[in-house]
View 1 (cartoon, one colour):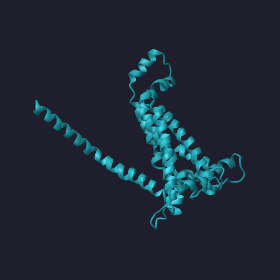
View 2 (cartoon, helix red, strand yellow):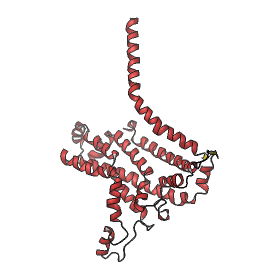
View 3 (cartoon, rainbow, N blue to C red):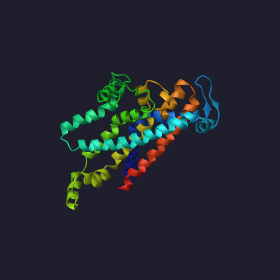
View 4 (spheres, rainbow, N blue to C red):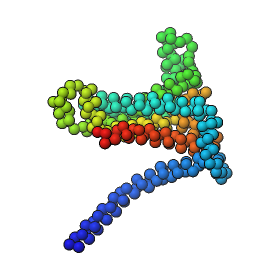
Length: 306
């Protein structure tokens, strides 16, 4: 009897050891690329660090200055980021679900082709930015938008879309929505395609009559893990995507700070002004925003709510 117990205990230890070995690569990468950068950002955020001299401890002065003295952050960056996140985050998320749900109704071959087409902007973003959007919104008569509007008689002179502060943020939001079909979109599509069809059959017997009712009462409640993943990815992308404004306008800061987002503010202070301590403080504030919205999404789509 004792021998059997010892063998079971030995096997259990061996299984745990194998599990730890399989998890080790993930933990190592997670620690190197997530944990250490977060610790370094929090540490540098309470210092004055210009990348050349040794960091000087200043306590919470960077955070105090961010709230009380940084007029650019309070007047431009924060409102722009909130507006951008509130539109692109939920908008891109809803758009991803609607497109994925529509594609799931198609046969396999056209669904695969269209899914690739919708997903491609998220992986060819830089090329599309230069080839498509900068040409569309070019500020002279060769720009397609200007050419169309002049032909229609809506305008008489070309509009400098990417310089005029009235249009920069709306254009950034438009481009962000266009490129929002990322891995969250694929996760939702996979979740819809792997639904248990017996649920729909039972729902039809219970009185569900159309596709819309199926989506509300069956599809969404039964794929909350995929919905949660897509929501978190949408939130993270909405807050961290600052490349759009720089690539469109070709400058950081953007003209009149009209398209300046938190990420652009971090890059401005960290890599242009070399005020790494202050940039780290802004990045910690961004991390807190992402954490709060991610926790909200987790509560909304947690399994226990099913």
